[in-house]
Length: 277
Picture (tube, rainbow, N blue to C red):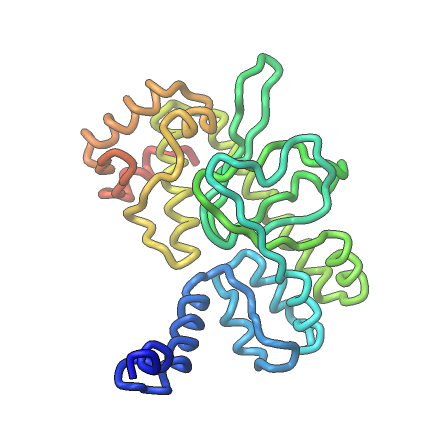
């Protein structure tokens, strides 16, 4: 009897395996960046849209004009997953470019080395955002992508998705729009961060992080910084000491509350007034 209970659940309930499968399915759907898993044709268009609603590839996967068969083909290109442990590189500068990546879980930084040998962090990427676009133009990656915590990405072979896009105009338009928007955001943010006082830079950084978290269904007013103060400084062009002093000053002004890596945006209007533009 004991042996049967272990196989079927308490009291020999043979429904337990089905219940466990449902739990696994719910856990999978909780990850906002996951794409649909079932065989081609087994889901409706609305179900496919819901499956990846918070991922930056959502616009690509559910491009207007795509038939269910095209979506199934696209699904096959986004099924490969890759785990990247904390402090390990997804790719490094100079490596051949083969794929773009959608962060499925975790957090990354993209970094390069300046002419004087200093490290420059160009950005931080969270779940639902893209990595690897830097390699499209030159055919090789121009920076390093390093995991700030244990992470996982969806691997999208670029040559294959590009070939598919050439055959499907709606997909091609969505792909170009997605890449353009991601690049434009990075350039705009770097332009804002490249000028202004330390307070303006830190306020802009916090507001941008808050906005991106909110877009993906996370709390935008209270969050844990996955990066260190030093890494924030390398991104903003500030020293570690300046970042720490600026956070403390914004806290004294009542704009934020900081407890180690936990940040709460108390007065969003005050941060907006501090940020340039």
